Image 1 (cartoon, rainbow, N blue to C red):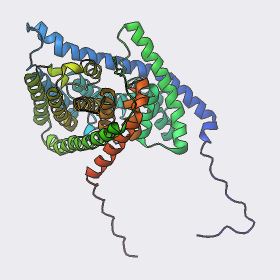
Image 2 (tube, helix red, strand yellow; image 1 turned 60 degrees about the vertical axis):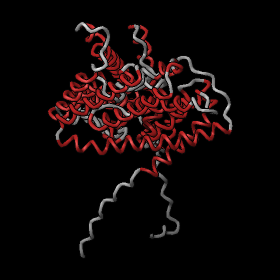
Image 3 (spheres, rainbow, N blue to C red; image 1 turned 45 degrees about the horizontal axis):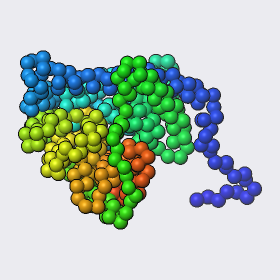
Image 4 (tube, helix red, strand yellow; image 1 turned 180 degrees about the horizontal axis):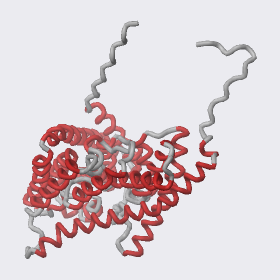
Length: 447
């Protein structure tokens, strides 16, 4: 390395915030604020449509056909149709219907405008007809894709860096209240994307602005329509007692168990994914039938509703906690097994997000363990959610925040236990996950 000549002025470091001080950045902020309004309205409409589809196909349609309630076998044709629609969308529409959920929560890049219809159709079929995935991944893709498409209509020479900021801001707006708080959604996107340093600051400010506007739009539309905000909330949270030595011991147990179960779910999904893709249409239909059979088996074995195995589990979390006294340990174990298997199958071929099913599996597992001595309900519930989230997502900070903020003030009480469970689950899942094979380095050509 050559030395600087004596007396030569030192090169000043580049200003990482130079872009923030420009007029163009203010224009970018204004653009993200304006785009936050229609994108958050789109996200609200998407969630409302998914909710209506679920009610229409699972409850209203059987009654219209003359059934007294929804038969336990009803998920079988519903999920077969789901598999057919998703497979046809992936096969024949541009793109692949969004990112593959078995490969994790993908927040890098946005789909092009021509790919957005495929993302929308695959997500509506998946979420509306009962596959075990959540809405967060399609919303991230749709929000980012629509924001960039709209920005390029307004400014055709949009720079790549500006397009990236607009795309992330659209995703912020789309999931602004889905996880219960705009800050939690923003934190999820930041940790998943790996942004840091000055780039984080440049993206975070317009993203938070879009998320704040999106939260206001969600609240206003929820009040105006009477449909609510589709935000993750819990009712009837049990009181959390202060952590003790037994609680920390259970945190180790739950962390290890969640790490093992989470790796099992992910590896099964990755094992099935290429095999499904070889014969996309018949294999995806078969996958839907398998999910339906798991729901039927759960209903027959426990006497509970088959719908508890279907869907993301977002709307079922609060009823599960409220009605926990009505579930035996055996019923909760069957619920965890059937939901986990259906989750792994759904990850392999359908299109949606991995967050809410992992939360539901962790919550049910925690409630099952809470029947054992020394493990309070609130702590078991929160530790199960946090540990399964990190085992499936690999995002420890987001997992801790999800599990603790969901419990409100009681979440602060159990946070030390959640942190231990999350750290243990994170380490166990990393140790059990095979190291990706290194790509061969091409040999250097002779001089």
